[in-house]
Length: 156
Image 1 (cartoon, helix red, strand yellow):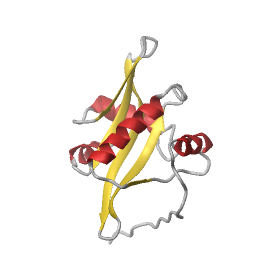
Image 2 (cartoon, one colour):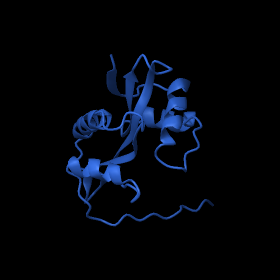
Image 3 (tube, helix red, strand yellow):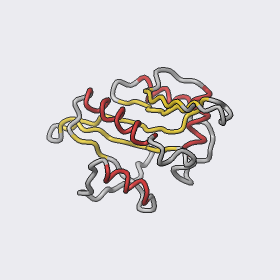
């Protein structure tokens, strides 16, 4: 019998860093499958305004038997005029378990976390090629209303 558990990581482990690195390859070719850097993951875990959400599935057909099949990085941002907002990065589920409720279970846990942080809105971006992800987001009430921008930060 399969068992799904969605949780916020409370401490760093090499196994989690390795599994997250492998999972992120499903999100973007920019990820190389290497473990998430320890310093980065510890920074997220130890911050009161950030969290690393993971979904673990126990399945006797897997090796290892329990593994991370979903992940999302959660952030709180604040502005004087904007108030408290949530920001979502790297929301991904293992392609082998999509359409089995993993994303929805993660979404519910994520919304609880943002609510506890007093966020009024959740902001995120998603590449135009991720059609299935967009369908999922719209089913959760997401709307598109702003144009995202990005610019490289120059290092001195």
